[in-house]
Length: 511
Image (cartoon, rainbow, N blue to C red; front, side, top):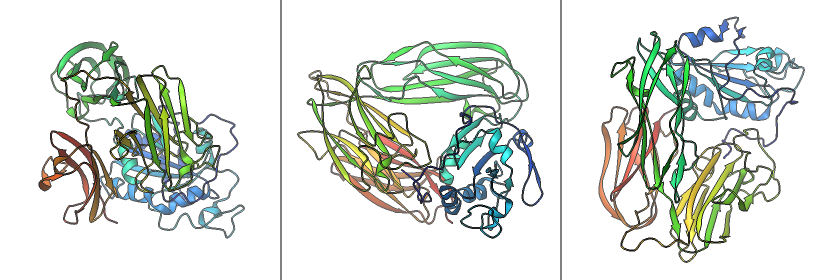
């Protein structure tokens, strides 16, 4: 849940005169001078292909100050600014019209409250211009936007440098002459588990990222490598222009992978950047509980009041709820803190609840985190786990590492076909800390005894660490890996357990 730099849990919302610009809006342009007198023109930076992060704050805002002192944005700028890979820029905007410039330098001469000097050791430009906050219709501080080169904005939370970059690299960035990309993917459902039948309506945005106009594209949809549908698009898209593509509705009944592929671009079989020409998503058959009583355990992290959950039936009727009702089913990713409301959980406690299901069938459980950083892992090892009531030692479903929302489908009380063994559950894998420096902790849960092996793969696909296969019992396990010899950068840790595998991204970063 709440990141470590957010020390104050109180709302910092301004008077809601405007509606905050939603993600996907076109960024208002601006030209402004920073404290050193240098002029910054937003659209000029975007036209140079830079991804721009706007951190819009107020000097009196305690969560803003805590985030600033956490140095997440400093680290992001050092890695991706002009002295890093030079793919991004950061602009800090002081957006409150009531405070004077002295507040940025500390309390001396400040006409309002300021907890300290915002300028010292800040490597990125600081702009004191409330007209920018007004143009972006800021409702609360801090508000952080990632602005893509196609001029669309996406709001984030007070995330660490790695999470910010994960959002930033989803931006479409122009490259080459003939270049198209697939973005803004949606399957039309939040679930990745299939109970009975799961309807999907795959859709995405086709974006021209090349200097040559995009006039033709062939797009293919496959399920487990079996062709389902082909779309022939014809039109005219100049640089960064977008066409919305939607495939026909389909229904999934078994586990597998759905893949969207850009087959042709302007009648050619390849374009200048094939990296963004394919998208896929995996689906599994939902787990089945053996009775109509399911045991739910929740372990809160340092911010238990930010958790809320709902149990729903197959038509969406809410059967049971738990946690802070002030958060509610739509309260995820609010970022600004919330006090304890009705039903709010305490911090670092374990909650046990028996879910009583009315009849055999399909159900789902929905978890909400108010701040938008899940229940695990940097600030307390929070989790949720669902068990068969007659075996409260081995979870059937578990999780906790998500952002604002997590939705899990399952069935209960259904009899499986005899003679058809149930597909074994995939192991779970969590990394802590991430980013990591010289050591990384690997926490994994095995649903059954298994031969396991661990490997670390670098961005070139090379195996840079491997552990020989070892037999381990079902349950939770932890291993610490020395990564001090690995250069800083992006890696993947892969856990193989019998014939099931799971992979997690790892950032190696030393400060």
